[in-house]
View: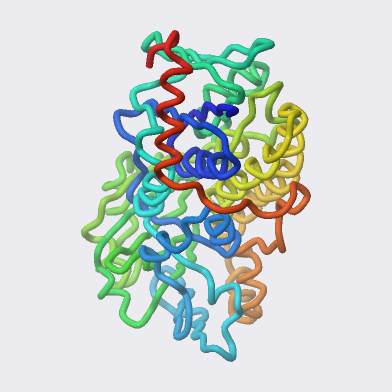
Length: 414
């Protein structure tokens, strides 16, 4: 049974583990933290993300935690002070079908379902990767604690600061500041949304979104300019929120007033001309980090995972299969990565001219075009790699594979 070593137990790494289980691979996932976990904020599951989850066999379990934007759905786009620019209220006759299947979920809920499905026993925590080695008989991972693990394939799903990417591309330029902060929060004030499922705010130098992302959870964010906040002396997440809250309407303040919040400076990397080498490849943010303005970071990691499973199914030429996976995914993700800064320049802008044009377009643009931009439609973005994956293997089978791994790696104790 071929064996994959997956670095990173985030959404992408767990999804990759599930995909490879479905094609009969033995999998072990290594996580640097003390426990596999995700930040407690929201994530959109556009139709392409839901299609990947169905292919992984976990869509039904995930749906139990989601909020569906279906009829009746009411979304408002406002100016920061509360003036409504556009109100969308959908019903079966007017709501675009793509939006009808748009779902929101809190990241820990999605992560938990993926973790339960792949099996917690295949995840090794406190294993920080410091490098890898390739040879004629396979690949090996080296860990900071001195352990080693051997396998047939390494999948670097270890995020923006990927150790696997760093070794694959030592000549790559460092990441660069995007110029934006993301202030993100999670609250329980679903009642404060009233009859709305989402509110979008646009202002000078700020963009904000508030969405219901669970039966009792609201996710919100602010997109801001880094230099504006530094010049204003707002250093912490709490200071940034205090600076901006008075400019928003009372509904925004009611929802965000008691929240778990986090402030992150956003960085960018140029798309890679090639991802991997030999039997080592990349997936998710390790391969194609993208600004959150695209709304597609998690969805593209899920698409990567099912693509990897399709590429490695029924093949004896692993190296060629990995390069095919990378080429198909590189074409798809490069376009989305490049769209991030363009979107941000329109949605988070200091220019009053751009702001006025944006607001004018919002007032008249057909709902279908907005939805198309949100969901990145594609009939099957991975169709070149073959048909969708087959049935999910049982938990008992996964456990049996884990016991086999212990015997196979005895000389590299973990």
